[in-house]
Each structure stands twice: as structure tokens, then as C-alpha cells.
Length: 257
Length: 212
Image (tube, rainbow over all chains, first blue to last red; front, side):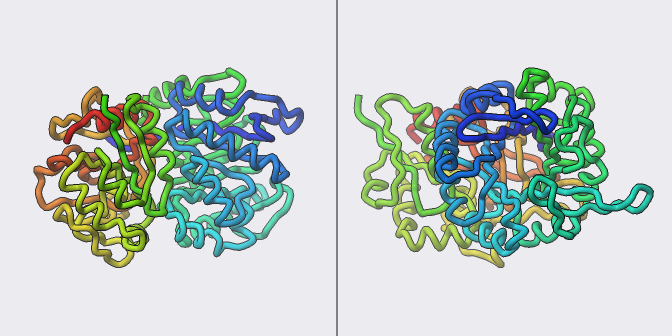
């Protein structure tokens, strides 16, 4: 009897629709967010994460309404990320029905914002999203740094040190994405995931690179992640969340079935 | 049929909306769910839901500022009362959180931090995710909820009531801790039924039908 490892389908949302770029190119429409969220809930998803990739304030309002609608029909934890920059942004999303918000670049520009957010709303609802990329040459000791702007802009910040700092500022959870693996379907960066997870006491959600069910199991067993996040393997019918959980259970991982 | 009024206590913290939405989702037609900080509404309500999020001190301060302490102390004596998460913890005498916080002292006992680093270095704090609730006594609120069902938890502190007879369920995260307490018309749970899918909705449905 113990805590189950979590599977979190992730929905990229643009102007009220679920979208997903496949292999970095064409953005495929993956449906109405409310219907997609309900489908994942029925399949046994443990949480759902929305990443708001819209650019304009008008589209953000659409996202708020979408969260409201999902929250009145889906009774599992909902996380919303993308464009969360102020305490007011957080309040808006929580009032719409989100349970947690993911803070990414705003934490880099102003780490104090993480502390401010945790003081105002509690650590339980503050997830810090970390986009990391390997910077050490092949054959040398591993080193990863934080990148912004979808992995294009380096910050010079060491990923492990950053995760520890976010924990000390009160973050309740880390959403860790490998920018080397994101979109490649070649599996998580397991060394990165393990290095971060073993350095902090708060849970780590592994993200970036899932192309098959085995990758999810590896994230838990070898990456020491508490939760695994994936998008495209679920969106286009390749696998259901239920199948993913059965695959994890077959490897001896405790799941909620 | 008479109208039934259920008050969700609002003291300006946390996501009360999701608690109200989950209760509304399973509420019978004659039941109205109101999110309120009006002591008169709490006084006249037939049942009370007391949700909670955030830290103990901020929660106690917010209860003080909004004048909710007396209405809660009163309601807990006389009508069906459901505490959730921090709404369980602040019912206790004292919490170790925020360098020690005196709480409502409705149930004797303390709130302790998970100290797992030495014995269980692989376990994470906060205890976040779906864990099993082992029912240790029969209760109307467990109706149609199978033994050891998984509920969604997120917390770093847990309650230790002085009287073990108050414990309605336990959960294990390294150590076994009381995950639900019951006493007369009071029921309080550490997990978040509003985020625990069908079993959580069943618990709300049971509460709305319970006469304490």
C-alpha cells in the first residue's frame, strides 16, 4: 500500500483548441479540450496539464473559460501553465478551477515570484517548469542548463542547482522537460531526470520524448520520477492511459487502476 | 420536499470553486450549495463543508479576519460538518507548521510534519498523488466506497488525534497516518474528494445525504 506513480496527459492549447506539433512541424488539431480532458479522465488519467501556447490576451480569456468548463466536468487535478507571470494570473487560473499552475520563464526573470506565489497560495499549487538541455561535451561529466524560448536561449543556469533553489523557495513540484528529447519520441533523458529527482525532496514530473509505453516505465524506474507526462502517444489514439498503466503495473510500478 | 442548504465556508483562500462544483455535480435537486462567508448563512445552513488549502498560519489568520471562527465552532457542534485537507488540520489543537500555530482545538491533538528523509529517502514530501484510504470504522460517508480506494492527496503535515477512536481511516506514506477522522456529526478527511474522481464524488453524495 503506497502512493501510486502518476500519468499526466498534457494538452497544448491554442485559442481554445488542443493542438500538437508532430516532430516540430505541422500543428495538428487534436480536438476540443473539454472532450479530450473527459476522455483522459475516463481512461484513468491521474491529472491533466494544460499548456497555454496562445499569444494574445484575448486568447488567454478563451483559456480561462476552457478551464472553467473542464473543471465543472472533470474531477481530477488540473494544472495550467504558459504565460503565468503575476500573482493575478495565478488567482485567475485557480478561480477558474485549476488546482496548480506551472511557472516557467517568470521564475527565471524573477525567482522571488516563486516565493511570492507560494506564500500567497501555498506550495501545493505551485509547479515550477524547468526546460533543460545538456551542455557538457560527450564523454565528460554530465551538466545540464536551463533554456528559455522553447530551448533556443541559454541562461547559463545549472539545472540541478536551479531545481534545489526552486525547492527552497517553496515550489511544490518540478515539471522537468528535456529540450534535447522533446518531440523526438526517443524517451526521457533519464540521467537528467534521475540527477534532479535524487537532488530534491519534492516530486519530479518527467517530460519530453515519450514515444512508447516503455519510456513511461523507464522514467519511473530509472529516472526516479514520481509522475510521467506525455502528449502525442495519447492524443492520436496510439495508446490509452489505461494501457500505459497496465504496462507500468506489469513492470511492478504501483498505479491507480 | 424541503430545500436543503449546504454552505461551503469561504475565508478567502484556496480553490473553493472546485469543492462547490464537485458537490453540485452530485447534489439532489432540492439541495443548494452556497459558497459563503456570511455567519448568518452558516447559521441557517443544514450542513457545512469546510475546505482548506495553504499553510496553517495563513488559514487561521484568514479565519480570524473573516470572523469565521465562532460560526465554525458553533456549526461543528450541531450539524453535518465535512472538513477537507487544511479543513481537517485546523480542527486540531495545534500545528507544527509555520514554527507552531495554535488551531481551533475542536479535536484534541496535534498536526505533525512528515519526517521521512532518514527512514525513507526515496519518498517525497509533499505527499502528493493518489494513495489508498483504509477505512478503520464503518461510517455513512464510506457508503459505496470500496476498502482501500485511492484518493488524491497533497500535504506535508498530518493529524495525530489524542483519541484513537476518532480515526475513521488510515493511509501509509512511509509511516501510517490518520487520513480521516469522525466524531458524531463531524467528518474530516485529509485527501481532496473534489479531485478524487468517482470515489470522491461518492463521498460528497454520501455527505449530502447524511444527517450527522
